[in-house]
Length: 119
Image (tube, rainbow, N blue to C red):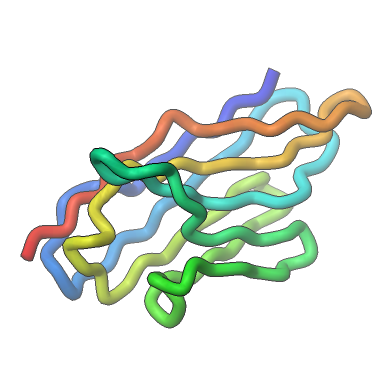
C-alpha cells in the first residue's frame, strides 16, 4: 500500500506565495510521473503541473511563470512553489503519482489540501 500525504496549504493574500509538499510512502519500487491537480467548487479537477522522474515538467497555461514544480526522488516527494497567487487559484490541491510497487503500476491520489487566496 502507498500513501501520499500533502502539506503546505492555507490562506494567503493575493500576490503572496505558498509551497505545497507531497510525500509518498509505502511499498515503492519507483515513481514515474508526479503531479498536482486542483478542484475549485463547482468545477472539474484540472492539472496544474506535472514532472517526470527525469525532471521534465508540464504546466497549465494559467500558472505558467508563477508556479514551479520540483521533486526529490530520494525522498519520494514532490513540491509546488506557488508565487504571485491570485484569487482564482483558490481550490483544493491534490497530489498524484504513478507508482511502481512490486512490479505493478498504480496511480495514487493524496487527500487534498485547501489553498485559499483572498483579494
